[in-house]
Length: 221
Image (tube, rainbow, N blue to C red; front, side):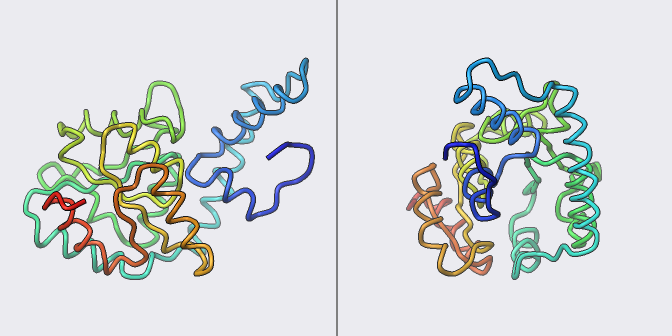
């Protein structure tokens, strides 16, 4: 959408869900520069100052209010129990501090650890890479696969945004689109958005996760 007026919350979700705050600011600066030749905008140092402020505020809110998606814990337990040797990782645009705060708040640390080394398998496009980036850049998925020693065809990603789905798909990974976080009236639209971005199957509830995995494993999707 053209710039020049404040974004509503819904517009921010449509435009930027799946990107980190740094990516949003760089995108907005580039778009404003296109629309207003000669405009320089925030410097990189100023952007980093705002990124730190946003990160602190979001982590404060997460520690207070975050709750897990309905059914996610049960689904992750079943995967861990039924698929010996599987590695589950968080691959996100968010800063590593934010990822750690999130999984600690909902008690999911045990799912995202290497069973042999105990190392947390958290990969952040904002913190883990030599040069910070954001989805839809596939760099963080490529980095995670390199660190885990696995190939794209051995992976499945779950993504709830266009940016995230594009990131996984561009890395050669099969993506399950998840529309559960959206309002009921928005889910059909978001399912279409995620499929167009490359998701090979879409689920509304974590109770569907094992069925989605089975379809991918069988090659039916």
